[in-house]
Image (cartoon, rainbow, N blue to C red; front, side, top):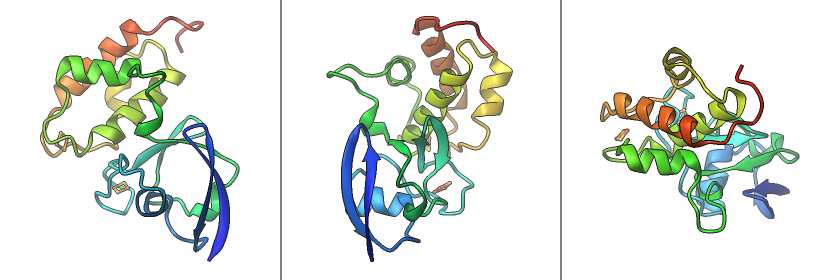
Length: 160
Ligand code: FES
Ligand code: FES
């Protein structure tokens, strides 16, 4: 066991864990942030996705000992002052979920995409979301939600 200082959702958090424990396990079981979900544990489904310094990252594949200096954002950290993020609101407005198990990972992957590419094409959305699986098959509504979020977000410079 070792003590780590993590930066999660804008707050410094101390946690004791083995250095090789997955970030997903630490978030869920030690910090009680249960938004990131355990799906496959092998980097194949995207249910565990969080943002690491803004990049969508499979937290099941990342050892907690390697992220002490990173800014970690989970679904719990997207809301600001009681207001859902544009992507969260768009998923709600489009009904882009059924069971919801994939939704946290979908929203964080979409958030990362829209931070890089403000007005993505449908093809860019499909490619960016390719690693996030939805067993309920809500893909068309997920794409629509990301398009809606892109429309609702203020432009921050040119699209890439
Ligand atoms: S649980 Fe991490 S990618 Fe499936
Ligand atoms: S909404 Fe059920 S897995 Fe996507």
